Image (cartoon, rainbow, N blue to C red; front, side, top):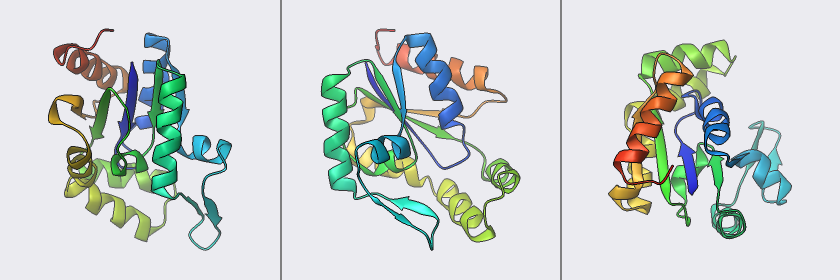
Length: 164
């Protein structure tokens, strides 16, 4: 099964993906690391982030999914591309909780407000639903802990008919 886990920074994508990967015996990759490994994108020192060309990135993700069927790719940019994923999981969290999490990660105030705003308007969910049929999309509210979020994902995947 080829899975994408996306959502705003700070919703728990990376933590959940690692545990889900162990549970399903899937390879887990982070979008930023994958892009760097594939030599996609350029580092922008002013923004202090990797700028990834989405068309080239989507082609590389499709190649990955063709080569490694049992894969999980996680990252916030993944909501903006269409790939050969079997299911797309969008993790959501209350914007006030997100704001607190991003403060503890020492994000700049501008980045915090940008991400809180995007979470508040369902940016990732809207983009995912433009790129994928609704039956492939699983929206999950971040739980009180990783296990609760993981349980919600596994239950939702089963309800959608995924073979776990």
